[in-house]
Amino acid sequence: MKDDDAPEKIRRFLKANGYVISKRDITQILNQMAQALERQIEQSSGLVERPLLCEVIRFPNEIKIITELPGTFEESISINFDDNQLEIEAQSETRDYYHIINLPPEADTKSWKYGFLNGLLEITVQKGE
Image: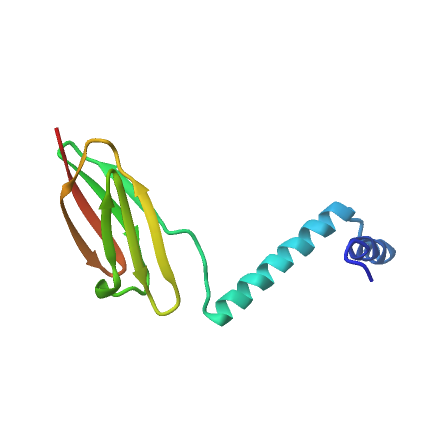
């Protein structure tokens, strides 16, 4: 059976049993099922990929960058600045994190501090002139 025939065969089967549904809806359901199966396989293998959540908050005298790094220990975090970009790299048992964040032009990347607690990294950068 060809993959493109499957939705039509399912549609005919459902119609014969009193259920009316379009071929497009069946294709969408099959695609959602395939995505769910892929996620389950990734999770069972320990390779879960998802975007890194990060927020840049501007205050009058400083800029705070807050990002989540679940499962990471502070010793595995690397923070680097290059011009007005912040590079965060970290490792956990199940995932590697790497993210580049563009900072506002007024960020003074020579004056910064950070804190890490319960998987949340908070970096504070002072604003320059």
